[in-house]
Amino acid sequence: MTTQTAKAKYTYEDYMRTPDDVRYELLDGELILSPSPRTAHQRTSLNILLPLATFVERNELGEVFVAPFDVVLDNFNVVQPDILFVSNERSRIITDLNIQGAPDLVIEILSPSTAQRDRTQKRELYAQHDVKEYWQGDTDAKSVLVLTLDNGVYRVAGIYNTGQTLTSPMLPGFSLHIYDVFQPAIPRRSPHANQ
Image (cartoon, rainbow, N blue to C red; front, side, top):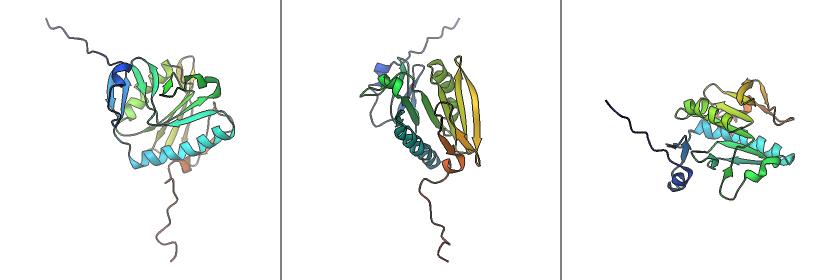
């Protein structure tokens, strides 16, 4: 008869002892190394971050943060969403060190190394911890999936593709043209522009 030893879970305290120059997340007590994102990921993140942060600031709705920044959901789950929004009403979860609790909105830009985890494990984790809205930006499909929490389960509020305009149930008045999301952040001059 074989017995299987239960794998020890890492805790927030263990996580805090990891090197500062290496990006980890803690998911269900497992330390996950997060590799550096691809160029398309960084461009997409910036193209969402700038208009979102501008809208939130202009309307004095709360604060927007960008990775790497720890979100401590519980003792066994510490994530670093690509972009997150915390409303004024939940500002008490913002500390000098990190976010202690669920943001109102979390945005993950899917990468080959993280897409499966973002679509499944993190989706369940964010729902379990009451993140009200969760967006998944897909740089390959050039689309953004917007999910809203309904009785502890995410429902699709919209799947937005090139040519469409994303709206957020949580942020009335905010819109984002999907074409712009997946373009280079800095317009590039055509090599034939002066010919």
